[in-house]
Length: 412
Ligand code: SF4
Image (cartoon, rainbow, N blue to C red; front, side, top):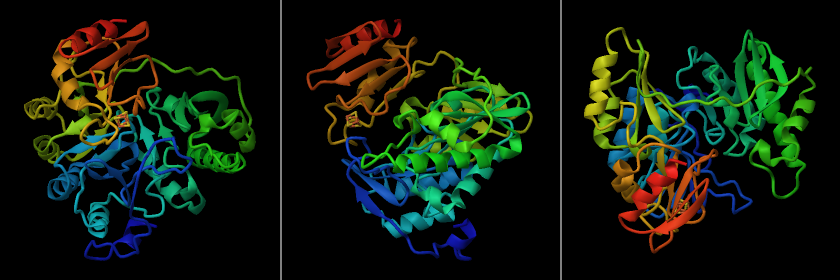
């Protein structure tokens, strides 16, 4: 459904809301895909949680301003950044579901009721030409069968740096004048012309759906969960293959003035405060990054320095070497009923003393939600303190000792 079909002339929701309900868990402990969305809220311990998909992480300042108003009116006043560059509103206690959906739709943040859970499109934050992101989103939303994709299935449009392609289920990565189509982060030798990129990504998604449907009751949610998934999807596409040559490169999150048109900021623990939201809302174009940062993009010549000052004044990090670099947490208390600690507060207190080195992820229990895929230090709440585990082993600590142990583990 297009945005114009969804909204009436006053900008109100004109179609029926097909699905607004609270669900109990977003985790893989169940066979039911219960990924939260804007219409399907997650019943978190601190109240309903809405996840708003923003393909490619791209959002206008005005749209972020609309989220700020919703968070202030019905939520906890903050907006969270996810590792897929989407946005979350927490503690939406008392938010009328239909009005919430209407407000999101009026801001252009809910263009499809049927496909809102599957508009999972990662993109390189500094991509030169963002038009393929919008083209893929439009084509995805116009394909009724693809509304059945799992909420975790991820497309990626990579700008060429390899910063998002290797984490997605199906991804496009420019190689010379061709586009490599990666499957479950693997180069299987598939190359297409730029014009064929979107149709090939969608064909790969269709092939995944078909093969996943044959897998029995416990359907795979990600291509890597499907036995021989990349090879089987490549075979189903029936396209010629070349010798695979691409491997995951080392990439770094942008920070500070990136070029003449963009400034990147790290958002401590991926949580934007009301004051930060107000500052960012005055920007024309924003890009949320998969590293829980934000880029003020498409700036006019001479605007970057003043934007860097404005972001720093709002408490966002724009200097390399920030103690917040590589520090992430799960929701913890009070957002998660399973949490044994307020990991955000504990990580915040420890951040200055544990700077630098491997990424570190704090979790409120053994489930380890949101853990990075690569090498990292895991700081897990035990009820008595924390278990700090790195590539070379682990140890328990409590109180002030935790930060020192994490600092040592991050050095590798
Ligand atoms: S890891 Fe964190 S978010 Fe996940 S269940 Fe445990 S406390 Fe909750």
